[in-house]
Each structure stands twice: as structure tokens, then as C-alpha cells.
Image 1 (cartoon, rainbow, N blue to C red):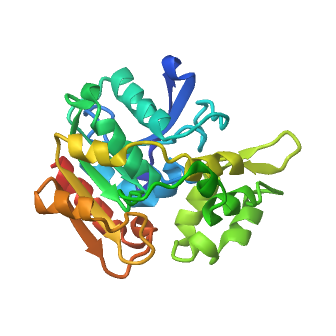
Image 2: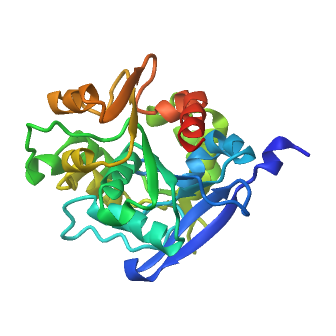
Amino acid sequence: MDSMLAQAPRARLIDLPARGGAMAALDFGDAGRPVDVVFVHANGFNARTYRSILAPLGEGLRILAVDQRGHGRSTLPAQVEGRTSWDGLRDDLLALMETLDLRDVVLSGHSMGGTASTLAQAQAQALERVRSVVLFDPVVMPSAVRIEPAQLSQSPLVQGALRRRAVFPDRDSAIAAYTGRGAFKTWTAEMLADYVADGFRDRADGEVELSCAPEWEASNFSSQGHDTWGAFERAQVPIRILRAAEGSTCREDPRLDALVAAGRIRMETIAGTSHFLPMERPDLVRAELSAAAG
């Protein structure tokens, strides 16, 4: 049997009534074993974006890759008004683990997904559910700098998200527009096709539209009121960070250096990588997750 067919994930929609909708997920590996890893994607992406990276792990582990609120196939409401932080993403993960009664899992994520995982593990209700955290270039803002919401709303990331084209005639047109450009320069064709598959939804007029609306992507960039540093310092499980060498969103900071020096966090900068480290070094992603779950 073709190996990729053997590793094809199961698409799931997990109802989280207290959170107002359902969280979509791709379930890799033996459905008869407990979940080993919960993997959380970056802002604007979705679980299927990482399929080719995670699928080989299904031979020995069970991986649940989720679509966060406002992304992919999830139906959790994405309300921009009044939003100030990623605490809602944290609470979605906590609700998922409680609903599925997950125990002893590795929480892992890329970029925003890594930060949401960090926030979740620090909550008391996560202590019996999380064994460790593995982060791939998480978003960690400088500890000594307070950026006002008005400044964030005018940042190039926010403004770029708001200008993003949301509608295409079809998915092939989106792939053609993205190939070799911007964030997708270092991606394989397979990764890009996977991103587009769940990154767009079909419209009644026959066209396709971004699953992550530009306004929601921009809100994720501008809503920085969560306490990542407090979450790091309250951690009672091992934390491993793989940091990009170029353009990292995990900022150099004396407070982070102190946590590393104290052995609270193990961090490594990966030569030759950008913020899209998982796409550029899928071998490292697989090795780190295998080691953490082993």
C-alpha cells in the first residue's frame, strides 16, 4: 500500500459547546491508542498545512492537529470586536483537552500555535493533561517593551493582513498566485496545496474564500494582551523551543535567557531557517516530537 495512503489522517469535528462551536482536527495514527501530541498551527494557516510534516509520525504515534478558532474547518466563532489577547485560543485548547479527556500529551505548535500552547500549559487544569511543550518559533514579544494597541493596529503585519486578497475563482488560482511568493517561497508544492485545501472555503457563487478572514488574521497580530512571560514562569512541565535563525518571532530577551540558564526552557536556534522553520526542517519537527512523546 502507498505509504501516504496508509498515513492519511482522519478528519474530525469536535464539538466544544462551552466555546460556541466545533474545533476541526486531523487525527494521525492508530485511533486505538491515546493521543500523544496535540499540534497547533500558525496564524492564517490550518492543520492540513502540516500534513506532510506530521503524517510519518503516525506510524508510531497518534497526533491530533487542530484548526484554531477562525481557521480551516473549525466553526468556533471569530469575533474581532473587543478582542485584546490570545487567551481565547488558550481556552479553546483547554476545552479540547477536557472534552476528549486527553492525558499526558505533548502540546506543540508553530508561531501563534506555539504561544497558545504555552498559555494553555500554564493553567491549573492542564497540569494532569500536559507532559511537555515543544515550540517551533513561537511568538514571544520583548518583556520590557509595552506596545500600545494603537501601535499594533498600524503595524505592517496587521495592515498586510487587511490587504490580503480573500477571494479567488478556485483553489488552483490561489495556488498559482502563491507559488514561490512571500511566505510560501520555501514551501514544497505539496505543502502549499495542503494549505490551500483547508485554507479556503467554497462559496455559493462557485468561487473560494479564505477560511481565515483577513480581519481575523489581523486581529491575531494586534491582540497581544496575553501574558506569555507569566506562562513561561508558571510552567511545571519541560519546554523546548526551536528558534529560527532569520526573522524569528521569538525575540531575544534577557528574561528568556534567564529561563534558559535556569534550565526552565531548552532553546536552540536552527541555522538556515526562517520563521517557517517547520516547512524548511520537517525532519527536525518529527525528531523533536518523537523524542518528547517517547
